[in-house]
Length: 207
Image (cartoon, rainbow, N blue to C red; front, side, top):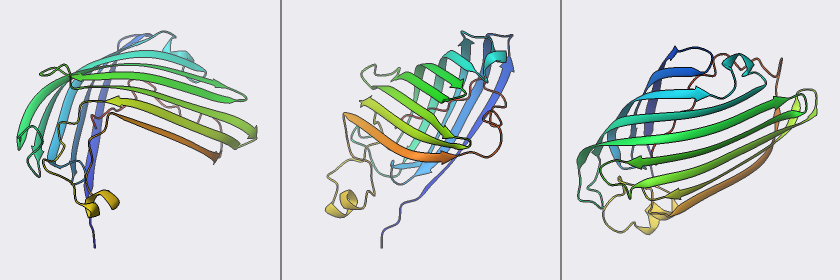
């Protein structure tokens, strides 16, 4: 019997600063045996600039978002950096394009993040999503992402056992990660009924 436990919650407060600017405060807390975190939390002020007015967000949106965050980590086991706990600052920059048309939608995002105590600990991620409408309500969904990774502060010290590797009980060191998925998506109601408030809507965690 193998058990892997993860718990987490996110929070976001946003203040509108007109048709193109927003400011907010993001927070997240999590506990994960897979990521060797007994308790970790992040709090970060964030600003966002929208190339297009937010009033056009149901059709098109191009935003640039920057945040500086404070992180506190308590680890389950000692890390490869000989830490059982630590507090570090990070910053991140994200650009996102989202276009919705009667035929479907296209979304692309590039995000860079870096820990400020060691500038070599960073990550660059590309995400893309194509939602192509086949007929009313049904669409073809294609998603892909690629990340260059060198920010895994939480990696557990020592060699992973065969059981831990095969059952994915702990995160392993890696330089990159990629994903690709293809599926069908059926939506009830308007294609815009999930657009409520698009300001600062993206959560990013260091993993």
